Amino acid sequence: MSWIWRRLTHNLGWKLGALTLAVLLWVATVGEQELVTTHAVPILYRDLPADLLVGSDAVEVVRVELRGPASKLTTASLADLAVTLNLSDVNAPGQRTFTLSTSDFHLAPGVTFLRAVPSQLRINFPRRVSKDVPVEIQVRAQPAAGYRIVSQEVVPRTVRIVGPEARVGAIAGAQTESIDLSSATAPMEIRVNAFVSDPQVWMATPSLVTVRVGIEKNGQIK
Figure 1 (cartoon, rainbow, N blue to C red):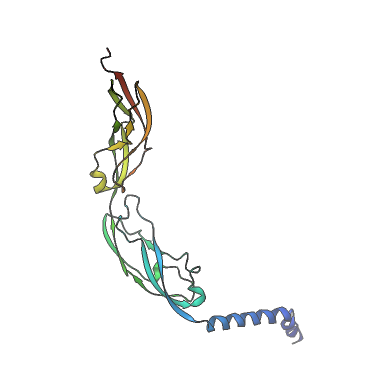
Figure 2: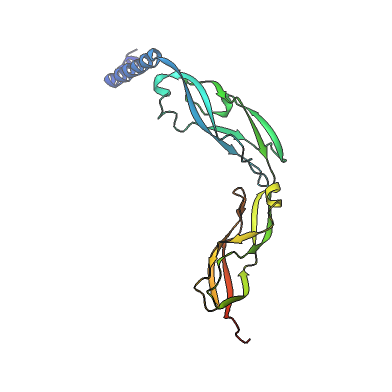
């Protein structure tokens, strides 16, 4: 018995302090006011197949209604909250519907998911494709009076574009930034960017190209 008593009373002050702190924390938690709040959270996707894209019309933010202790529903406490959708079973292009539930959120202990607005996400997954398209030179201003363009060349002649299948298929070519030749009196070489007009399609190769323009005086003998 004496051995047990010594074990119980060893560091008694520390043990009583820890017990008091635990009781105070329990009282604070149990006695804390419970609230309901709505919070806008972003949508994150994981395990999206490499040959698919998330449609541009997909909802980016949902509002969720949560219940829990006031200290866990502050703006700071919810700052990292997000919807995480698992797309590992999306294996073909098309539309899919996802019904949001507690499993789509990582909530702090004591916080309960009540509902989301919208409660379902209808998402289109287009196929991701690429193709090479020719680059067209755009001239904003012609050479000064008395001079003319005799040749034009762009290097490389093609660039590779990537994006949703339907949009990539609709693009016939890329264009260079407009080139001003109003002060040119001799052959020149310019480095400019090429671009496509569709914002949902992007370059898979460097967009910087070299434009070579041959310029000569009118009436010059070749």
